[in-house]
Length: 116
Image (cartoon, rainbow, N blue to C red; front, side):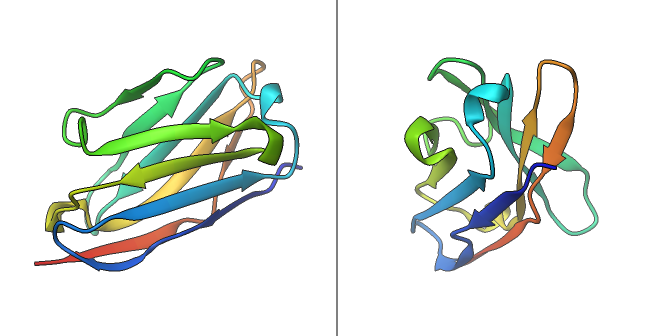
């Protein structure tokens, strides 16, 4: 069973920054897609950013230019650097990893709260 452990959430003022981390319990080369999602109260869980086998990430329009997803293969960890945060970025953020065979694993979620 794969464990994904997230960290880095918290309370920040609008315009501030946070960096989320998602550490996997096994080599991240075994996953073909890794992504960050977020879910605000009363809303659907939406994709924020995703990265495949390389280092190029795709982003939701709402976070383009502000968020950056990256990976550290040696640490089996992916990151989400979030800059210029807005109150509407407030949500629980989840990482999700998918294997080439379609197995999907989710982190436990980390709360990000942006105050105005």
